[in-house]
Figure (tube, rainbow, N blue to C red):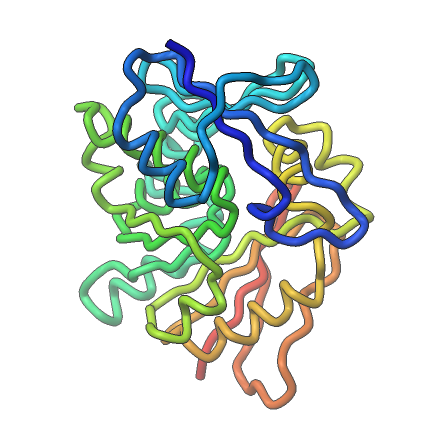
Length: 277
């Protein structure tokens, strides 16, 4: 049995001068899992039984959700492998610039606990996983429904693995716009990793994960990123941390904000830190 779905332009985040890929979802398990069918219904995606040869494929097989380009290149979220595992191992040793950027040691000394972190730009979840590996509780927002579905699948698999469930339990994943979500909450630290600016994109596109995000989300918009920073500064109790590519300009801070800023650099990226007074 082959269950097929189609994702149209109505499910895209924004258009600008960019055309999102047409995505055909295929479930190779028989019968199709109930949660797969429910997700299709939630997104308003009809289940079909045909697929053309030039669409992208959202494939569910053997408990793993993958997104596959027409050229056969695929991406899936696996928190126990690759770069994500490497970052978690580094974080587990308590070293690295991420821990310093989040101010974990200072926060623990001041408050006697670890900070709660809001990750407003989930992406493929590598940074959220590294933050959770440091022991922090992390609320993750991802606005694109397909990326969120892939994240959800990866997190579900991590929760049932003895090697990763203690980290996975610290992550709460939601689908939605971070700016809207923040209107209802405050948190200790807000972490943002906006899309790379256009001039940094050529280098970013060499990475498979970035290629997929750019195809799904379209061009980056620095004004939207700056608006998200402004909202974050209204709702972070301690600090906002913004991950930027090396050489990129800082995001624009809102008029009237009176906090302090600092920067921690790494070889290819840097963390811009906005400290609340």
